[in-house]
Structures are given as C-alpha cells and as structure tokens.
Image 1 (cartoon, one colour):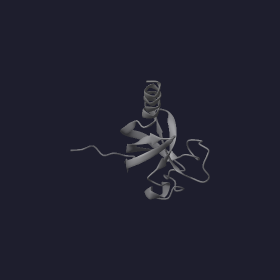
Image 2: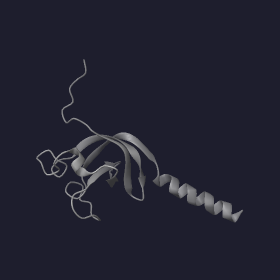
Image 3: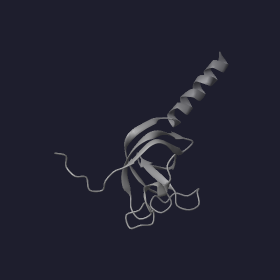
Image 4: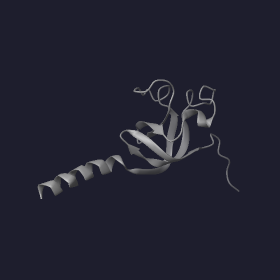
Length: 106
C-alpha cells in the first residue's frame, strides 16, 4: 500500500509539469528580451503566465533574422502555440507567429 501511495504522489507531482498549452503567448529571445540565463547565445523562448521557458521544437531563426529590427532579439512578438512544459522547457508541437498588425476580417 505504501508503494502505491508513493507512485500516486510522484504521478501528481509530474502531472503538473506536463500541462498542455494551446494559447497565445509572448515569444522572443530568451537571453535578449526575457533576461534568461542557462544557455549561451540567442534562443527562442516563450512567456506563459509570466514565466519564461526556452523552446524545444522550433529555433529562433525559423522566423527570420533574430537580429533584424523586428526580430526576436529586438522585439517581443505574439505567437499561437501548442505544447507542454517538460523539465522547465516548452516542447512545442505547433508554433505560429502572429502578425503584428492583424487586418480585420470581412
């Protein structure tokens, strides 16, 4: 019975870390714009509920020159993402960068 309780407790703790997200988030360079450390260079990151995560499954240069005026190292953009957090990394299954100036639909 004790073994079952320990397994249940471990499952409950790990379930929180693997929460699925399908929402619009802030996306940018983790080092330049979100003041994250732990990785060297410029890396794509997202901010979800005021917490920043480096991204696995998409790279910063997939979305143009990161050091351009509107690039991730100089601006924070909106993105529609799907994925989950694993060990403090956002594992992306879908990442769609949203237009900065959305046009109204007819």
